[in-house]
Length: 330
Image (cartoon, rainbow, N blue to C red; front, side, top):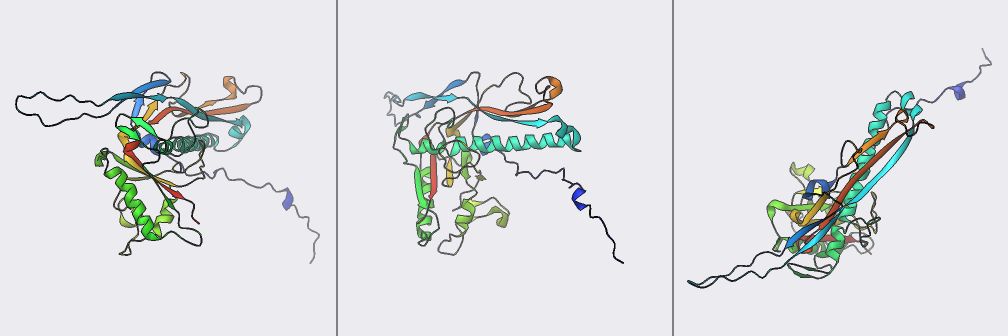
């Protein structure tokens, strides 16, 4: 029997899940690697000592005096942060209003971590205090300097190798030589210290290096997931991956330039911990919510979240760091 049924599907509201798809929470590699330096003001000078020289001393002879020099480098604090504005109704009407606030905090923490990492690792522009808050590791190694350990030539500790793309992929032997020379720049230097060695790499290197094998057919890069141990590159371990390990002219949480691998002595890095405003809780880095009932946003019924960190960073010894940069292929 045919009926004249009324179709009301267009009047049925669409249900939206309260679970928001989140980006993977990121943790800052530089926060874990670079030794902290407490700062009581926005600028702090850190001494660089050029070592101490010794020599043989004959019986009855005077000791020779060390002639090494020392100088100072500046740690300058910069503030990185952002804010989000949310209607109070959206927080009170949702089932998981408090959970939504926590998700905003996770997103903010992820953005701060990735942005700070890139500012410290991969910015290529000159430090200007805003779009380039610090001289990055990449820029430090690329810049000629006069240090207490002697003159450093621009890019002396940087090796570039074309990626495996295009019609004429780079031979595996070229990659083997490039990686061996890259590791040797640090391992054969006066600053090599196995206990304090760190290695940072862009996650992009995983795909590239899995395609490269040595003469025995073994991959140059061994993923830790396959071995049960940490990942290794030519036997070098203690890998940490960061999306900030790519070149980009200015600080960003989404760098698009060349992937980098960096090895060095963590003692050549300094991370300044500067104070924040007294009302900033729970700390540095941290987030703070201002609800409409507390004043701000009262007339518009809006909650505002502020996220920030106040840090300084400097690479003190370019000779103690080596960089491998994967450039575009043909």
